[in-house]
Amino acid sequence: MTILFRSTPVSEPLTFESIGQDWKQDPVTRPGGYPFYHYLQTEKGAGRIETASGSFLLRENEGILIAPFIRHSYSSTDDEWYTKFATFTGTAASCIPQIVGNRQIIRIDSGQGEQVSRLIQKCVSLYDVHPPDEKQLSVLCYTILLTFTDGIYTKQLTDEPLYQNYVSPVIKEIELNYNLPLSVEAMSRKVFVTPQYLSRLFRRYLNCSAYEYLTSYRIAKAKELLITSPSLEIQDICHRVGFSDASHFIAIFKKTVGVTPLEFRKLN
Image (cartoon, rainbow, N blue to C red; front, side, top):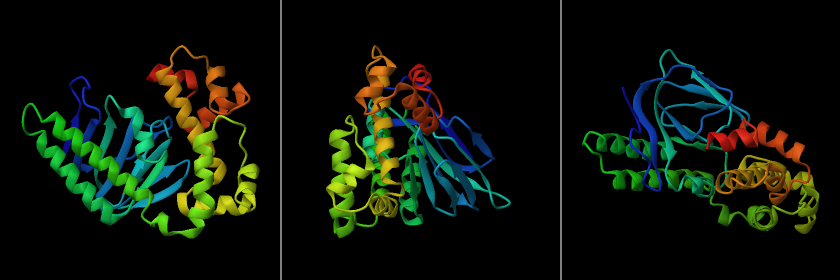
């Protein structure tokens, strides 16, 4: 069994807070989530992951990436469950949400899992040399994160007419105008479909409803402001990311992230 934790100050753009393999996995429950992006992959056996977004069974070489502060738990469904894992940090860690498409949960299939497995093995081997090559580890860390990005688009969305005609324009609208009072009803009218059909398409291609995507994007932007603009009041951040009521914003933030905006700011 191998588990390694960072013991030096973070100086690279992207790197590992922890990494490990051949780990006999015990049950884990995190009501407040984990403070870093957290990847878990099955090596042997199987385990079940419970999150706010649903339940996921991880068989051999299958993995899951979970965003910070997303409540989750996991436990073995076999007599023994062995896992690989990595958690991500770095001076540019605030860019990770953009790298992974602002997804809070990303499933990795066994084919992609084999790629990630080889990368984690290579990273662990670099720690055998003291001091390890931090630049090489940073490059490999970024490579792993790009693998998760590939996981979002395994269906070749650029070739999907329904995605291109209805989902993609709405995503662009959200990215450009998330600070405005957007609604699923108004956005669906712009692409000439019903709100229900638009949300079905979002769930088909992105595993979330249109409203959930809009909310997640706004919360991601709020996290950025909480960290990069510590003098901004919560009410100001609320309005800058498109919420009209501060108490509603705080409630949605806590439901999504697991802590209040002020608690998130203190943690970071």
